[in-house]
Image (cartoon, rainbow, N blue to C red; front, side, top):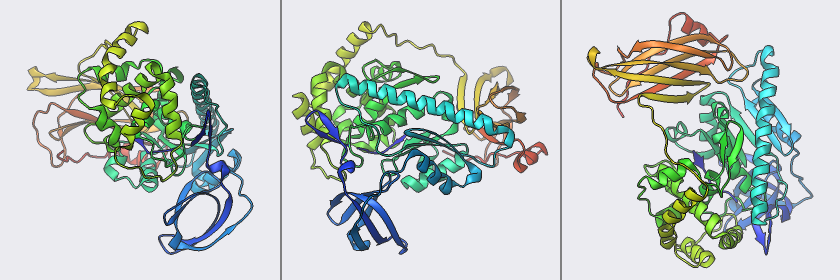
Length: 495
């Protein structure tokens, strides 16, 4: 997952959006390419030599004072309506490859990898309606949480946009453009919420379980429902802690922040050595290094501890964070000071009390952490396909890897052609071609031995393998090439 910092503001018991109080201005400036740009926007804040402005669709933009040609006061602009937001997105992505569904305040946008056959239009609309229904459940769940905390929920000022990308390549390009993340990082991300655009973007296959859309949608709720201000110095542990507190199960949201998550509780109890002072101060541990898994588990644990055992102090802490302003710079040690001010103890003391509190909570909520493990089985979702694979190392066949499985077309509206490849760490592979798989249907991948050698690989045993899934529309030229025997051949790259 890829998360940014995001944000909104407080007054005694009521949190108020700073953006909603800002005036509207017209800015004429030169962008980085030297092109002249004129926008009507709300001035959120001026910091040092830059203006932070909010465009009518909710995007935040930072403009250097030195780049400004003209700046004058003006009426408006009013935030876009969801219908206007959908039109803006259609103009950006093109009418041929964009479909949308509006359910105020949501705009659910589908970015297609190619034009959609007319026979699939109704299915695509029904899919978007279903996603919109889930996002409305997210809103209700988050508002219930705010009610428990006695924090008044407000309606979002801007449309809440969810972009669903059918093509992994399109998602990768969009994320790279919006976040400036490197290509290697982008390919590992299933979805993200941008604090600058205020948009949520996901890969289409994540709508199978809704885990990723839910996690990222909670970030969007936090910064649009009267909690924090975007671009304020909110610790990443809090962002991730509250988001991991909500869990989805096939379209239902069955766990909230006060409930124990089996996944994260198991992760923290199975020997995590990450110190919470590092979690508090170092946001970069959530950006994909070796500690990222432990970071999410411990963020869940710290948030769960505070919202359950220290609820009154938790409210004080939320109010303290809500007072932080966009682009505000904090001195070193401020986060530890905030913890002491709100909870009367340091972060190390909170970590010491966590394990005993969690063990008591497991008994009280009657949560069992045992999980049955099935050796030799894996599940992979990529592109528009999901593969459940069984792999067996056959000692009676000179250690060859025997593989078979089930492929499912995850597309809710399009028939697809698939190529599924099992690749070993030594550079060997096995491959299946499924030319015409109807939406949501399954196909058996018959047993094969992994015996083909990739360019650059070797005929050597390997303890590891990965599954690659490629899909294209069944009527596309690439599908025709696959059916003619021109299948993609994997190239071995040493890791």
